[in-house]
Length: 357
Image (cartoon, rainbow, N blue to C red; front, side):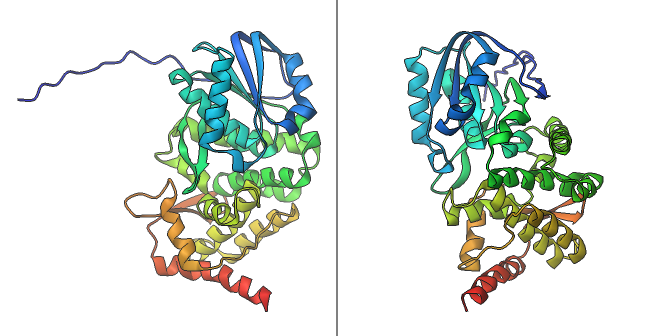
């Protein structure tokens, strides 16, 4: 006869935290801390961050810049530095950089001594409106993007547009792609606002960041671990992750791949009669206004299709695509027929062939 012994855990301490949008405030840390950054960000902005931080002991851990360093080898190197500096369970990590830094620092924080606090100070537009909010952390491996990781919420997020003044235009546009994604999925009036406002204007940019973060916070509050509505944030990403894998990480910025993925997702929605071509063209025009790519060459549609099954969101050999039903309303397309998906993908295979002729 089986014996069952229940484990009744006490209520976990609150994991609520604030996202502060505005000038970087004083950050007080009661204990040791380590800033994780890269040479580019530290060279431009580290002095300003150091002036804002008060900690018992503060260390700098610098890792190479780029998506191709988002690996377990880099994580192990980071962990070694934390042990070298004798960080402990009461220490805090500070992610100071873009999405790669945030993802890796969060993942390292989730596993160092079984989990310590970390703070997000995102310095790219993409990380400010998306990657720094919600507690997703992870690294890439040879099977795909972000397939190894953990949900580990930050203690705080500080979003300051000051860091964006040195951001290259491509990096800026990559962040705009994520802003457009949020509007297409959840907020038609916001999308219309984006059509009529230039995000190169600082006040418009602050407004767009605030609206995007508010939308994402609402989704994360409802579904922290992506069991339901949070999956909608993957609009364009199922295609984008395959594009990044085939292109080689670093060839396209993540936001650029997402822009292409959104156009592909829109085409799939049109194939199923869920979305109309006029609205799809509005999305394309808004992406192209910021010089985001909307074209891509697929070498072989069938091979591209098979890569979808390595996505974290595939389950029981079924693929789920997030597509728009109309601007501001999403649809979860579960296990669509292979033939119809490949038919859509072949448009990009054919476009590539046409350009070679």
